[in-house]
Image 1: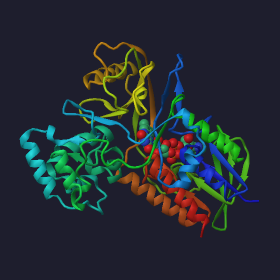
Image 2 (image 1 turned 90 degrees about the horizontal axis):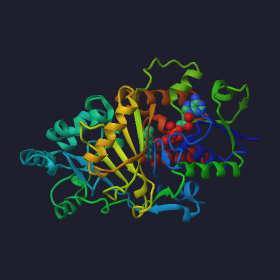
Image 3 (image 1 turned 90 degrees about the vertical axis):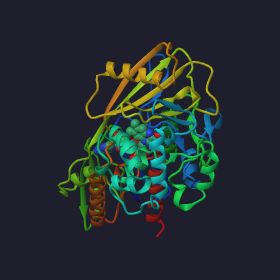
Image 4 (image 1 turned 180 degrees about the horizontal axis):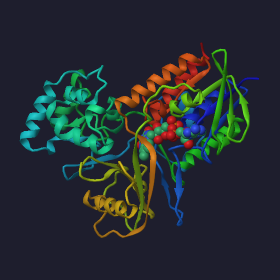
Length: 447
Ligand SMILES: Cc1cc2nc3c(=O)[nH]c(=O)nc-3n(C[C@H](O)[C@H](O)[C@H](O)COP(=O)(O)OP(=O)(O)OC[C@H]3O[C@@H](n4cnc5c(N)ncnc54)[C@H](O)[C@@H]3O)c2cc1C
C-alpha cells in the first residue's frame, strides 16, 4: 500500500493532498492548528458578520485540471464570480479609483518630466538582479526609485530596497506605473521594452482572463470548508491540532514521522509545505542560517452604518506616512456593491512591533476617512484588531537565499521529498504557489 504524508494544512497542503489522492492509496495531512486553511480563514463576530484573516479572494490559475480541483464542484449560485478585480490606490493624497498602480502624473511637474525621461531611457526588464535596489533603478530610473519606491517598500517591508529581494516587489508592487495619456499608453505598451513598465490607466484594460471567486456568505473560509469536504470525500485523513516531532530516514530516503500524539506514520513520499528550516531542524541538518524575519501584521475589522463612497473591492495605500497597507471592502465584492447591510471592511497594516489595538483601530479608521473610502460622519458599529506576529515574511535577499540553500540541500539528500508552498520563499501569491506545487507533484509522478 502506498502512502504520502503532507505536512501543513494551508491551501498548498490541502490542494496538494487532493492532487496526490490520485497517485496514492493513502494520503495523510498533518496540520498543527485545530483546523485547516492557513492564511485562508474567516471568522464571524458576535453579530454574525464574517471577516477574513489574511487572503480574501481566490483566483483561477489558468490550468484547467488544477482549477477543477479548486473550483470544480462549487454551487455557483452561492458565489460571487467575476473577471475584474476592482482595485484602487491612494497616493499623493489622492484616491485613484481606476487602478492599483501609482499615477506618476501626481508628482510635481518637474519630477514627472524627469521621471518620465528616466523611465524612457531605462533599459529592458532586468533579468539577473537579486537586489531590489538595483532592479528598481534599472527598470524605472533613479528619481522613481528614490522618491517613490524606496519610501513605499520601507513602509511595507520595514527595510530599504538594497536589502530586499526582487520577489518583494512582485508581491507588494506596484510593478508598473501610470503615465502619459490612456491612448499613448496603449501604443507604448505594444513595445516589448516598455510593456512591463507602463500600466494601463484602468483595471478593466489588460486584465487576465482568470475568474475570481468569493463566497456570498461565510467569507473565504467557506471555500476552505468546501475543500475540507472534498478531502474527506477523497478519503484523505486529516490530523489537525498535531505537529511532527521526529522524522527518520534510511538509505537516502525519508521513512517515517512521529506526531505529537505519539502516532508513527511510515510513508513513501513526504510533501512539506512549511518553512524548510522546520524540516532541517527535525533532520538535524544544521545550516546555521538566520530564521526568517516577519512583519507584525495587524488586521482591523470594521462594520459601518452606511455603504462605502467607492465601489472598489480593495484600496492599496502607498502614502509612506499612513499606516494602511490595504483595505478590503467586503460588501463591494462581486460585480456590484451590495446595497444591504452589513457594510464591512478589513484593513491591513504592517509594523515592526505590536501596535496598541485601540490606537491602530483609531488610526486606520481616520485613514479610511482621509482616503475618501468612508463618509466622515459614518458610525462604526463594530471594530476589532487582530494581530499576527508571523504571517508576513520580510522578503529579504537573505530569506530567499537561505530558503533556496536549505531547499537544495535537503532535497539533494532525499529522493522522496517535495518542498512546496509559500514557505519556500520564491512564490507568495496563491496562484503562484499552487501552480508551482501542482507542476512539481505532476512531474514527480509522471516520469
Ligand atoms: C495578510 C495577508 C494577505 C494576503 N493576501 C493575499 C492575496 O490577496 N492574494 C493572494 O494570492 N495571496 C495572498 N496572501 C498570501 C496567501 O495567503 C498565500 O499564498 C497562501 O496562504 C499560501 O499557502 P500555504 O499553504 O503555502 O501557506 P499557509 O497558508 O501559511 O499555510 C501553512 C500551514 O502550515 C501549518 N503549519 C505551520 N507549521 C506547521 C507544523 N510544524 N506542523 C504542521 N502544520 C504546520 C500552518 O498552521 C498553516 O495552516 C496573503 C497573505 C497574508 C499574510
